[in-house]
Length: 131
Image 1 (cartoon, helix red, strand yellow):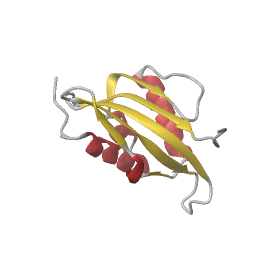
Image 2 (cartoon, helix red, strand yellow):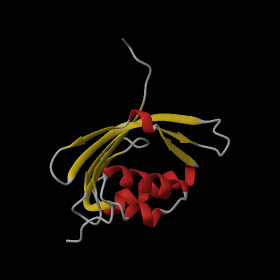
Image 3 (cartoon, one colour):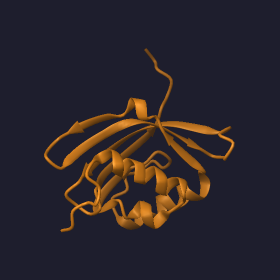
Image 4 (cartoon, helix red, strand yellow):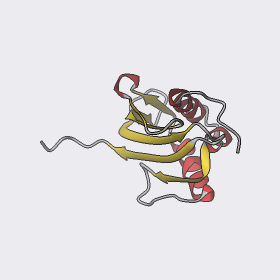
């Protein structure tokens, strides 16, 4: 098993954003472990195969233009020597002018000991607070 080329979880997140914004499907898929799961923002099901994840990301890249991370709100938790949980907020934009936005939150479970470090990715829309 090859180790990730990145030495910290933030660099994995930066690559994920870069690949998303460049519409680089192969780059994105290269970050997801073969046994990863995705609880996606834009469809109501859990994705548990590489084919499902590929189809979902393909559709996202064809409908969305840009994602921006709120770097000030990222929470990093080290779970083991190589496994981290990153939680935070991002905004998906449907156009280059940033007029249509979709505010969301994310959690990435990242294992730096593997070449494909994203083990799990959860993303969901941010709703107005009820309290």
